Image 1 (spheres, rainbow, N blue to C red):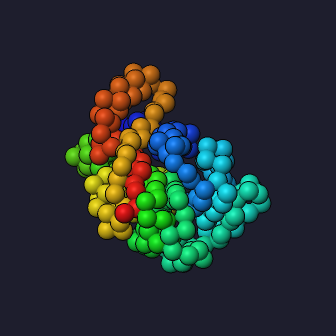
Image 2: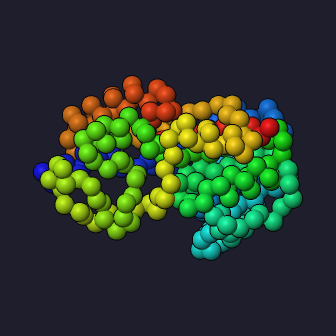
Length: 242
């Protein structure tokens, strides 16, 4: 029974997630985007692609981890802040575009992120956000079987909740997820902070296992059932500030 743990897909790669988000940003290339802010910038890998796309005059990146200072591209103005509580030291309606890729699920207080994003992004500006999907087609099946959803982390040390299929708690490399959204819940949350969705996209995480038959079956099902962001492994939303 221990081999069953291999059948649970890994979380999506940065490349898969970045590609979906970047394709949404391409929709804005005909719009003048000069000032950009990215929430949770990490080491700036996605930021470099965005800078090459828009050639902005200002690119501000926010992260809580001071270790990124030595690796962040010099063109980026880095702010070390806690998005759960801290205010952004920029005036209202300053930025043309805000980006928050795979960040909001790590926050205990996502309202602070959305409130500050709404404050510093111009009316008519854009906000790109992506996150894992609690209600993906796979998670719905797992819940029906009495299993814990993918990317839902009860413990940051152990994978729990699979005893129904004979698996005992085991060491687990957690991502630090605190809040997982469904697609419609995030739409509702965005609208409360004056963001109206203009484009959405599914994020599909591929599966690579030694068992090629299970691998093929999963990937076929994933391609078919992820036709809607509400069912996909994750989703990205490009919203407009109104």
